[in-house]
Image (cartoon, rainbow, N blue to C red):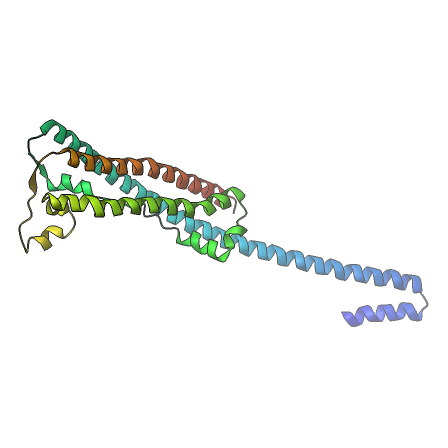
Length: 252
């Protein structure tokens, strides 16, 4: 092909057709430039297609993790509601029975030392943030909301761990002091079987109401109320993300 074009130029020069030679040379240059532009355009289109495929797979992976996280949040909220109601029942029973003792189940007492973490996995998102690929997402609203999610989860986890620390460092020692810690743990998986090797664990125990006990229960009720307030906010945020991702995937 190159020899063919060179021969045409040589013939034009040998025939003295200088004007036609320059026109032909310019045309040849334009043809080369157009060919380069077409090649670059195809290459860019191919790169964009590959990037779109990668982005689609990343969004699908993030969506799967968010869907699983939402299911976990629903289960956690159900547990939190149960424990919160148990604490309310205990407080009411104590106020009505004061100062007389009354019998309660170990399961009911177990709510006094329960704590929960939000348990939301965002491994794909963390990997995208670490690699910088999150910044390549074409949807700006989605990009910003995803970038904010790790900080939201971190703040929530810190609060949850503070609740755990209070439960282990204050509530458990208090129950141990009044002889109720074994009953409180009786509903934990495997505890009764392990403890019964040393001494039987009662399913029901007598509790003596005191203002100190009610105060401790009130603190636990506040902990559960905080979780009941925060988790729905996180849930709504994650549901918004899932909706945005679903809409975005429709056009991929």
